[in-house]
Amino acid sequence: MTRLLIVGPQGSGKGTQGVRIAEAFGIPAISTGDVFRAAVAAGSDLGNQVKAIIEAGDLVSDELTSAVVRDRLAQADAEGGFLLDGYPRNVAQVAHLDEYLEGRDESLDVVIELSVPRDESIARIALRAKEQGRTDDTEEVIANRLGIYERETAPILDVYRTRGIVAPIDGVGTLDEITARILAALEARGLARPEAA
Image (cartoon, rainbow, N blue to C red; front, side, top):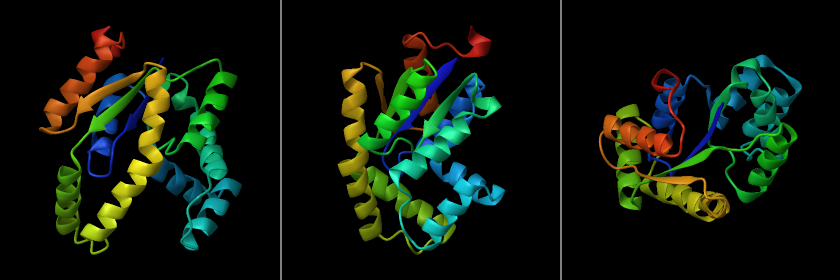
């Protein structure tokens, strides 16, 4: 059973690395965005609530976000573990996740912290925006998103640091180099991949 969380600023590559690590461990990568889209597509009560909020251009509340993620974690494929990406995004959500996991007599094993210098994040997002033809990713918008990350999400790392479960990873390098660093850090904490076990 492997329960992971990957945290990093926009442009750190956490989505890509999250999927790679989850595949290596045979667990689902659960990203908040994907969970929201799936809930909306399924037309569930939770999904309809999320849809109304997103369509109004508002942020989904901590309570509703936590309810949607709990719903996803209760699915059969997450019984053997999971990798969370984008949740918890603030300290209030950490408390929600703790409460849910404690109810199942579980806890997070490792929090993977992808560290990328701010100027590198901005350059990566700007390049991605150019490649995908996204006009909404201006430098001002990117800087604002990074500011929100620094104010709201970075403090969750302090909570997890006091528990001694944060594995800091240098997020600069090739995809393969970064994946290898993460796998080595997890192995050093006693989390071997199923095929390596």
